[in-house]
Every structure is written in structure tokens, then in C-alpha cells.
Amino acid sequence: MKKLIFVFTLFIATTIFVNAQDWINYNSQDLAFVANFPEEPKRTVQDVETALGALKMHMIMHTPTSGDHNIVYSVIRLDYPESQFKDADDEYNTNVLDGAVSGAVKNINGTLIFDNKIRLNGYPGRSIKIEVNEGLFS
Image (cartoon, rainbow, N blue to C red; front, side):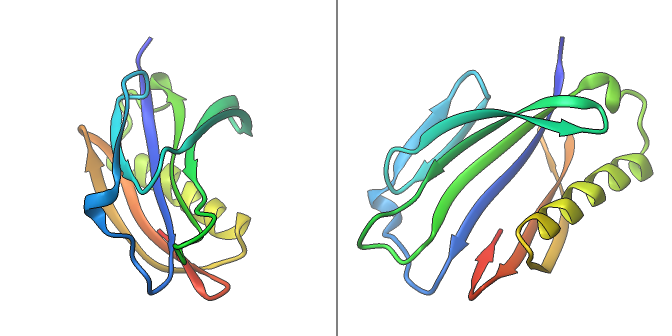
């Protein structure tokens, strides 16, 4: 069964940046994405309760321990059943994604800085930036 992929790419950043040429290319064939990380990330999966029931949330994260003032680099993917979005119009997709963005802001007690509508492989998505305690979550 096909599933809609809902992906948040998350970087909590400060003013120091890691040289991009030193980053590794993380390729997850089973999750169908490629992302760059400064070091090998760790992958975890947990069940998340939603209005649709428990959904799998895949988290690929790297937390620097030294030499980098960034807090975390991560990609988070949550798979919704395709039936949730079959024949859905743009207004429905907007409402679902609005709820996901609102939940993310609330869960980290942040302030939404910007929210841009995007499409990834034909699916609707969001590129967001949330301010949290002297850092940014985007």
C-alpha cells in the first residue's frame, strides 16, 4: 500500500556553520530520501498517536558533541495512509498541514517565524522555521 510521506527537515542553527564539503551523504533507500549531515546520524522509529491512530515516525538525527554550535540536524518522516489524502483537495491538504505545523510549534513551545507551502515528489508539504530559546527550528 502506498503511503503519503510527510517530511520535516529540521535544523536548529546558530551563527556558526559546519563546512558543507565535510558533510556525509545519508541515503535512506527504504524511506526514499537523501540528506546531508555533518556526521553519521542515528535513526529511531516510534509510534505517534494521531486522530488516525498510531503512525510510525522515523527520526534521523545527529546531535553535535563538540566543534559545532548547532543543536541538532534531523529529518523526520511520518507516514500517513494514502486513503487520508485520496481525492483530497488543496483546502483539505492545507488544513491537515496547518494542524501539523501548529502541533510542531506547540510541542517545542516556539514562535512560528515563517511557513511556506512546498511540494515534494508531487505531495504537498511545508517548509517552516520556528524560533525556540535563542535558536531556530526549520
